[in-house]
Image (cartoon, rainbow, N blue to C red; front, side, top):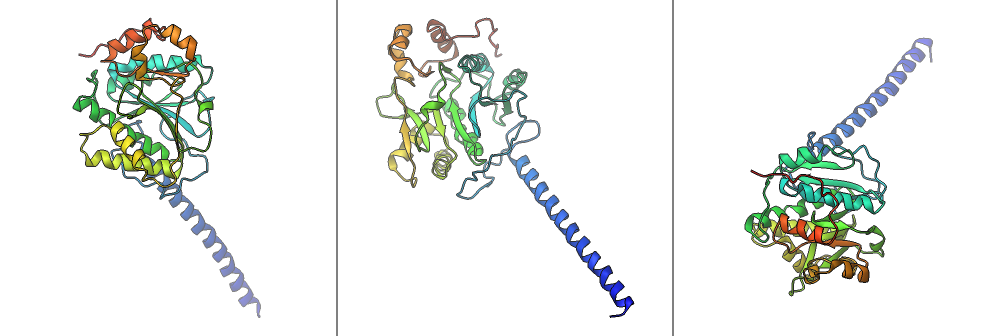
Length: 324
């Protein structure tokens, strides 16, 4: 091989290596851009929730790698379990009850990764002033104290499975709380065993209906399939049936393969049954509850009164938000 041939061969060899490096760099940039665009479809830059509920981040397998952060992350570093989000929703009428819920969590000595989905601009502006939680703004907005079991209340509540689904799709465990809840102790040690979902029976109801107000979903295939089926049934029923009834039906029908459900101890996680106990201090001393759900009360004012009577109201100096 003469010198000219060797020079040409060396030249094309270098061009080939550079081309390979360039191709790899371009493909990497495309992958990063694609991930960013997909994330934007779920959560807008201003913290609002995308209306595209059918974004497919995974097929039927949850990735076990740690999920990336999304939305405006709180500056405070969570001290709760990893890859787990504590989720609730609140509108302007319930901002003070949301503050009480947060105060009760703080008193337990742990601070998990908390996300509140604000249902209106007033609640969003008030809650985003905090530096220890993530606040997202829902596209569907309502500011008023909605009558329980009313069509508007049912429509409001029936959005929650869609919110939960988006977190599960990112490989995050979800502890969903109704905002009218108080933590007395750390609930996470009670989510033991190899179960997909942990929930309570709604003890105020005589029809063996399960409660959807305090539910821990592990990021597993069965729990994701469960929540997808729940969202589909809500859509098909056009919000004429509550998600509580629909979830109970799905679990009782046993149609989710390999779904493992654990019922939480009613003495540790009481809800509607508390309506029958006027002396909560005595009841608390006897049962030592972990989480108290103040449901089956008519509205905000009645809930606040019960919390105060039970000495579970921790934000008494806060001025109630006035809805006009």
